[in-house]
Image 1 (tube, rainbow, N blue to C red):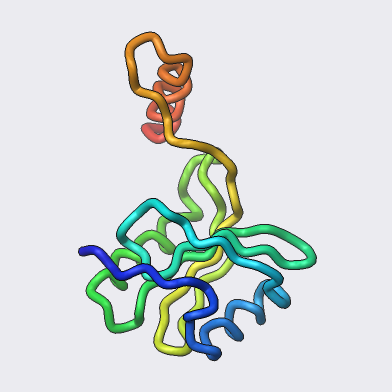
Image 2 (image 1 turned 60 degrees about the vertical axis):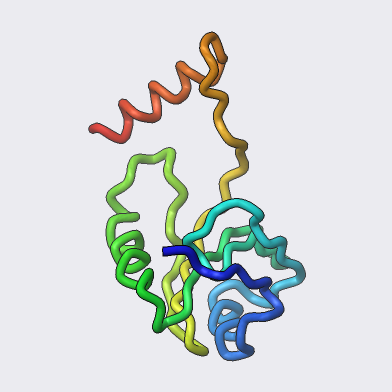
Length: 126
């Protein structure tokens, strides 16, 4: 179920404070342009690190899906981003992840991405 996307500065103050309790002060945040399942999806920069924060309003039907995502994260293969924390505050359910840089894969025949995709799929099957 799609969720309306907001920017970091539009999160309630209590939600931002709960994130900053884990990260330290947020210096900047860039909203992700892709995806429809998170009300907030942003690359967040602090003095110490860059991470990815995603979340949904606490009363949204997507919350159980996000809780499952948090529960399985420790069991994902090494190439997957690690969950750093999961917090509920200010009417939001929020997860912080290790930030991985990347791009969308090219699935066209002969693409150099295809062997990498095959490796990733094999890793997920272990």
